Length: 125
Image 1 (cartoon, rainbow, N blue to C red):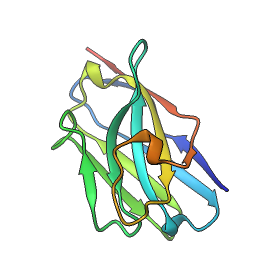
Image 2: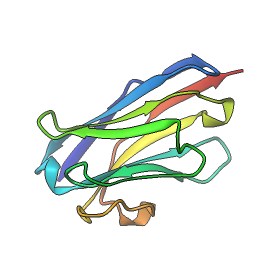
Image 3: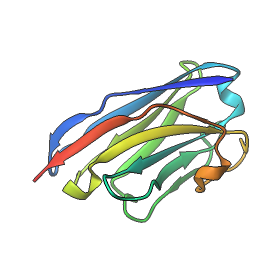
């Protein structure tokens, strides 16, 4: 079992920056690829970014590429999502997931085994 807890969400103005974190406990964090997904009201959950088990490979949705950076610190069992140039359309609940497909950067939510509860990010215009 892996327990995931997100933090760092909040309210930010358009054009601003915010970093959300996901702390893991339980089984070996470094055995999992980690991903970030988001879900806005009335919309389906969508892929945001993912990072392989050792941070060597990352993947981003086109909508955030060049603005968001995913990283991880395996010594702290934490994955981060640094968000820059935020837009109102980035408003959503951001959730992290852990995938046993550790070598890859899965973009499908069905490939993730564990999920956090999510943290709200609101971008005002």
